[in-house]
Image (cartoon, rainbow, N blue to C red; front, side):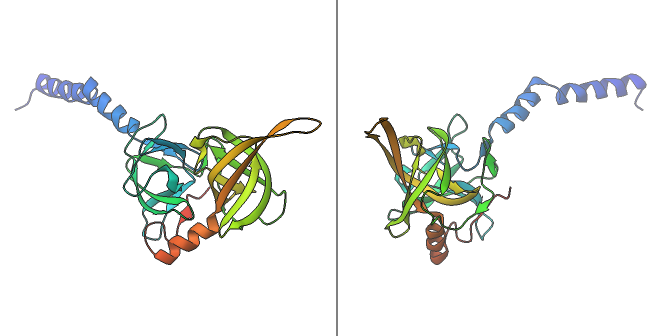
Length: 230
């Protein structure tokens, strides 16, 4: 027969286990093992600093994202800048369109449609109007907007001017009216001379419609992609 003292002692022992430092550390470790990711987040692909274009699910329900293929080839490990490593791997690439598909571990990633306030509400139509405003969020330079210049540099590739670009911005999303329209491939800054000398930053980007057409045609990772809803 259990006495009152036995019951109190047993309860105290159970409570001690629940609030023990080891249990608290385990809970914190689990939380710390997850990282927030959305379009515009800084990532590290096989040791190269780049930017995540977008994150969502393909038609198999797999959590996937996109970045530039120049960041790392197939099987490259992906980590989060200033966050956990080993959160995913590159599973497909296209060097001509310069995109890579990343398969993420859903136990290690918290996906968001609005990273650092940069919202991707949906996938939009290709920009076609000269000087139409487009915006980007790079892992190296952050937020900036500028005028669309032209498309068809070669099939699926367009260009725009933005305030700044650095190599870590490869893969950065390009949006128009909050809708995803492109993936930044590369950029360069040149001096423009005139009455008021200034620097002009030119970026080329892959139209996201061309990326979707390619992954859907192949039917592999990323096919049927839809971004995390806002």
